Amino acid sequence: MAEKKGTAQLVEMHAIITGHVQGVCFRATTYRHATRMDVVGTVKNLSDGTVELYAQGEKERLMLLIEGLKENPGAGAVESVDLDFYPLKAKYDSFNIIY
Image 1 (cartoon, rainbow, N blue to C red):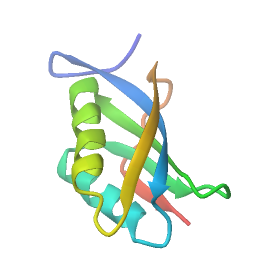
Image 2: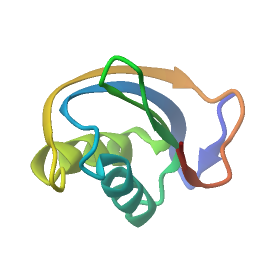
Image 3: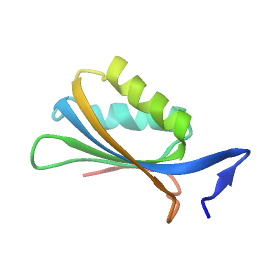
């Protein structure tokens, strides 16, 4: 059974973000957005030029995180986001940038 925070169910989101998202502090921008929204997880660059995001929280907050990254990507630019949602298996304690 998924963990609950208040009355909203927590879920895990996996996202692959494409665009001008490497070499422009996009992971740091993601970190700032996520921590402001009380979302936990990880963000890292992939070798193909995309960014991979694992995030956990209320689904509404996770969608707001993605919208925030699209609207305010810092010096980068988001072209597309491929999203999947899953039930929580193990909970992250914080949000971290993976180098």
